[in-house]
Image 1: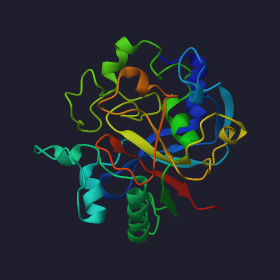
Image 2: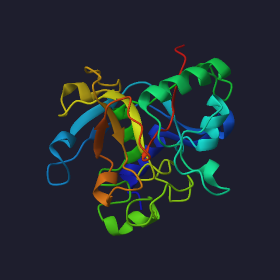
Image 3: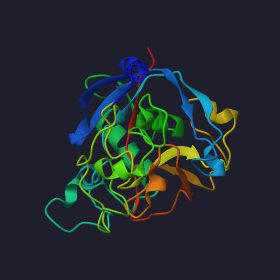
Length: 258
């Protein structure tokens, strides 16, 4: 249950209404706000803390669920995923996509839609790490948005303990307080940031952290990862050209400046 303070943050920071986008994608509007990013050393690795204030100073929208195989194929004309068996395969998250592949997908989607979402002009893109964690925490401050006990994780995530060695259809597990699903587990989600091994002043703002781009960042954990890797603060990295059957993404959308 969300405490009254969290409910107040929720009311200020998320529309809680899914906006229809292209190809069956749905987005949730997120408003500016502040949150405590990262976690103490007792909860995670060195590159996940210490906790620090982070400002989200521009509105954006984020897809309520990861991009699916069907949605990817409608834009690109092909499906790179490993887990394509069964009639529901198209509803599973697209996997085996690199950040470079996603850049091409985003370019095609923006060209096709002119960046429009629900009649509003803007641009589709990957979320920054800060934007991803802001949405995942949804006004909460624990290991997960539902609390600190991994015994409750099965109700919210597909992970090594319950996924059965494959990705699963998106949207089957419980949502966080702002309506996002699959923020933990299923596929680890690429972000726009280059990987920086420690949190510093660059991580206190909404914009992605730009580094040498030798490694990119993924958040949320995947179907083959243990529970600890699905925490809100958990970070993973890989070269942007790497494709792996646990790597996918969700889309952000930036409204056009007025």
